[in-house]
Picture 1 (cartoon, one colour):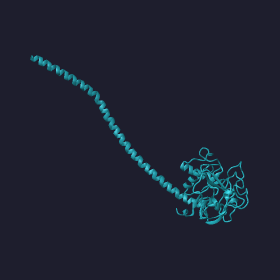
Picture 2 (spheres, rainbow, N blue to C red):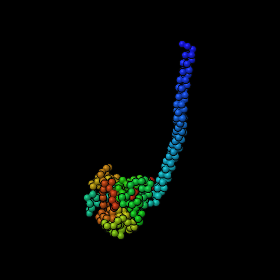
Picture 3 (spheres, rainbow, N blue to C red):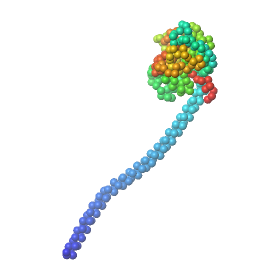
Picture 4 (tube, rainbow, N blue to C red):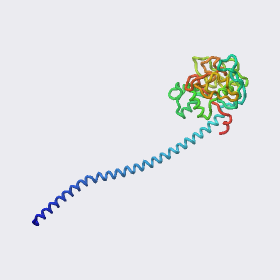
Length: 315
């Protein structure tokens, strides 16, 4: 082949390679900004991830601190509650009495039987709307159905809370470091050493209690000073019935323990005692037994709390 032919071939290859190189450079210049943007975004994301991890760690530390503060506040609340319990409760001395009735009573009140009760403390008054609102605000528990806009009816702050079921009552008692009284404790606190038929004495008296008032409603827990029991407990007969801890069994008295009976081990209904504003003179007797499903709530059932005597003064 002639020399000029080789020269021409070389020149053509050179032109081709230059064309390819120029095209590559153009494409590279198009790709490079994207690569740079990806690298920049990657750096940004890495920075944000690092910042988020630091923030998450800081938030976690803050959450732990808040939890500790809440736990400390709850401990302080319980300390204050224990001191408050001493002031708002009445000491019920140990004693023995004949529980139930053998005559003029209903079948579920028989047989009358001897019972010994250890000392304990009992709320002087039924739990009020104002007290229960503190509990709701702190725990977000369901409020009574008749309350409007998260509050109790106007001018009923010192009325007993109603429309609370047994489970609500127990939850409140737990929250204030107390418990519900047993049926035997309740009757002992209501009848006392004189084994009264009503908390104040032998005869029904509308100057002593809120009862036989079916069209009316609850009254202030401190209205009926003449209705106090021997131990100084208010409204044990009338105003509202009061949930107690025991399961209900109509024939339980026939096999009840003679020492601090706790009621049947299980059942379908719970006992409430005392009768409400709508009941008659028979149903508000300190011997009368009432029963309802634990999830029941009525506008004539409330509760009060008890406390073991050894728990007072130990906080």
